[in-house]
Length: 176
Image (cartoon, rainbow, N blue to C red):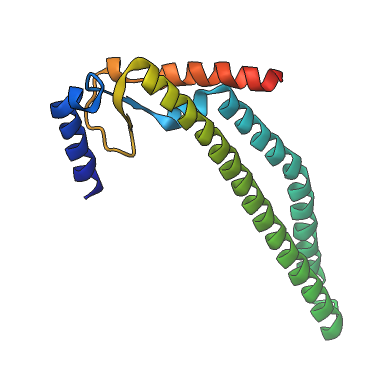
């Protein structure tokens, strides 16, 4: 249904063109490519990768600690009294739960940071795209993947122009 609606709107713009105050030009952008290749997108990826690296050491050491506890429990299980074995088992289970909770929290934090970076970059990309579309006289600019563009000539791909314009704006903002 969404695909049909987008195609119908695109067809209406193509046929009506000048009636909408533009020459009927339609372009598209690949927002995923813009997110990945823009300076801000690359920096966001680096920040996320830095956070991942930061957590890797902690995760590895906790994982080794849990593995060691399990190995000790397995080795000593026969030698320990029922109470001592049960206490060691509880300690192991508690540490395992804490580790699982910790890794889940890390994963959620990283996903949230990624979503925040993506949202911030997209907001700015949309503003730059509006200016670019007006300046270049486009009646409509579609998103390549979301609007189900089945075919489009590369000459109407505005992605590289968008990245260039966004990076220029980003450099100005970063310089201030």
